[in-house]
Image 1 (cartoon, rainbow over the protein chains, first blue to last red):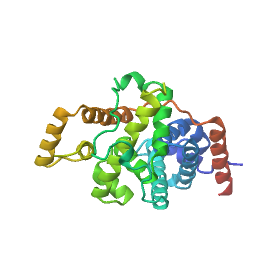
Image 2 (image 1 turned 180 degrees about the vertical axis):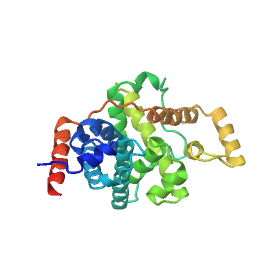
Image 3 (image 1 turned 30 degrees about the vertical axis):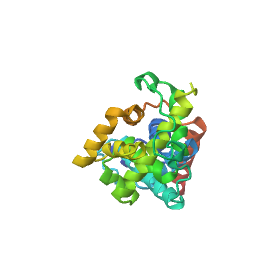
Image 4 (image 1 turned 180 degrees about the horizontal axis):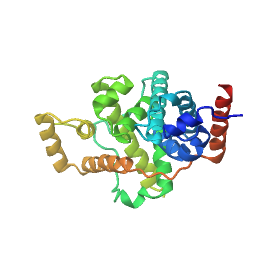
Length: 194
Length: 79
């Protein structure tokens, strides 16, 4: 029995046998998803979803891009679907308001410490775990806006389009995301998480 | 004059778009005399640099890899 009837066709197009996808591309796709979705369970799920979609659409693979780029593009659209869905479900309220950082006169309550050179932590897995946990604590919309803007390095206009929000809304979300992340890292990494 | 809270907004905005001449000037003047806001600005830039280059050695857990392989196999059989 032929397990993957499209095998010959796929080989001609340089797309490896789907039975090998999870072995060959699993790690790269998983890392891509994990950096954007923050939770490992969600990342695993979306990789599976993307590969099944890719399987159904494998005849559309033109061989013009590398298989991994093609799969990543499918994965990205799945991730965006999830982000939009999560953003719709999330209330627009921002429970941890800014009062924690600023006093009544809008001055810093507790200034940040000195952070040192990013390169000295960047290679430590524990540091990235803390970063991921801090990202996971942000409300969905805020996290999404920040991730698309920073990790994906999208232009602001692109982020607005992806999330269907106005520029004014985006600046607000990014400001709050940065305040929260900075203070979360201050507390959980620089103050003692090490 | 802008408060520290408002200045953090300007610092954030400047990562994404250019500020008006007036805002930019106010930001500059504020930063000259405010160490906490300078630290926030450094932290924001730091965050972007660090995340943009985030290495990751996470690997797809073996169970998930196997689950996905089986799901693909099932999809192939269903066709």
